[in-house]
Structures are given as C-alpha cells and as structure tokens.
Length: 159
Image 1 (cartoon, rainbow, N blue to C red):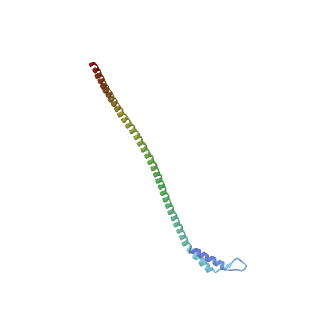
Image 2: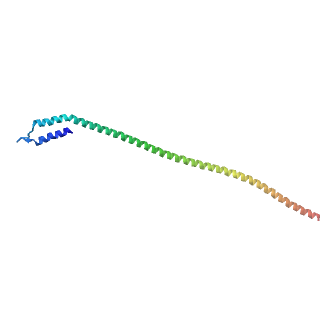
Image 3: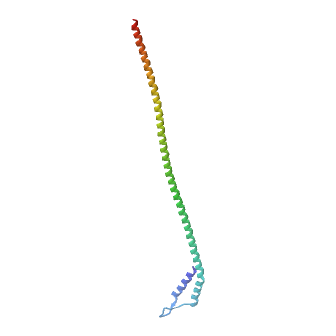
C-alpha cells in the first residue's frame, strides 16, 4: 500500500528533523513534506479502492464458503435421513420376516392337526373293520368248534 509507505516516510522526516532549541518545534523542508503528503493524497483513493476490492473478495469468499457449508450440511442431513430410513426398513423387514415365520408355524400346526385327525379317523375305521373281522373269525372258530362238538355228539349217538 503506497499511502502507508508515504505516511511512514513523512513520519520519519518529522522524527529525524532538526529540533528548534528550547521548543517542541522542528525544522522541515516544506517542499519535500508537501510532496510526500500530496503523493499520499493521490495514492489514497487507489489504495482505498484496492482495500475495498479485497473486502468485497473476502465477502464473496465467505459467502461461497457459507453456501458450500450449507450444501454439506444439507447432504449430511439427507444421508442421515437415508440411514434412518434404511434402519426403519431393516426393522420393518425383520418384523415382517418374524410375522411370516409365525404364520408358517401356525399353518404347519394347523396342517399337523388336520393330518392327525385324518390318520386317527382312518385308524378308527381300520379298528372297526379289524374288530368285525375278529368277530367273524371267532364265530367261524366257534362254528368249527361246534361242528366238532356236533360230530362228537353224533358219533356218540351212533354207538
């Protein structure tokens, strides 16, 4: 910044100026000091414009950083929402899987009950048939035993 250098030069001139004895005044070369101050006055608007440009650039960079930060935050929120949704999907899937397993177990129990009932009814029918067959066999044996008894009786009569 040219203005600062010029002002420092003027300040150095005052500090290095020869002092007037018994006073706080000093002797300066008026032309040199006026020339430095005039150059500072001319340079000041340029340096001020540069400083304003730098501040505007700084503001632009800060705004760009804010926009980028907002974008990063929004993406992070979306990712968190996605992760939460996936967690909910997993929980829902586990719940649905458990429901399916429970339904399958209930269906298997019902089918087993139906099979047991069917087999029991078929065994009961077989039992009835077997009991009738046993009755027929017993009567047949009794008849055979009765014929033998009759033939023995008839043999006794013949004698």
